[in-house]
Image: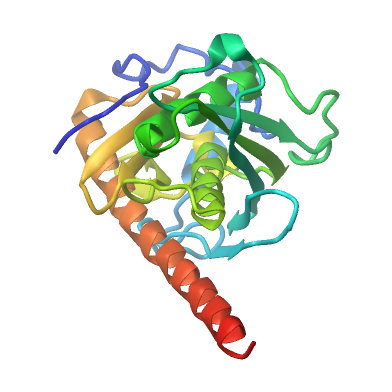
Length: 284
């Protein structure tokens, strides 16, 4: 297995006296202090019931419902929409087109840029700005992910722009953005070496859980991975909070298995879209 690019946090054993850092995507933060620890313990007990089900009725290894569409708009070269549970993302691709800044132009390959924003009510509480330091960092990471997937040498001296808008955020935002970008690039006809599919996983006590929501990330890490499913290559890896090294491989394996399920859903939608297009063209 080849690993093109990995972005990861420092892994260390979890300690009970360390306060959890605030997550800007998570509006259920309880903060530190005694009340925060009590709420954290309560959430940890409620993530998986005694019958083995999560709060939304899923088993620990079950994905949320995935719904996606291609070709929503005519103006961009490619567009796509994806829902992963209550996380909803819209993507648009412009290009390959002429580079706007000649100083950035590369004559042997294209440059890839990404811009991500959020609507005001995407997190359940009104946001002051559509972009911030977090979204800018995620935009750079997404652009880096697709450097490993797009055949850049096919479009020398050009530019590909990916625009993402988060309509609703309930865990797995990075994964949804990567998946939506992949579908939009396919719709735009941009040549890629493989699909880029992404999924999240976490650990609740000793039980790994797949495709976590915001509330479930309160009780553990959120590991996000993106792979090229047909090539078996990892192109992105990131963790929010910490994960014990003894649990890392188990969580990672579950996330990669989830990526394969996401790939099947996305590939099925692409095939349906192409069949519909072929049917329309054959009747003209």
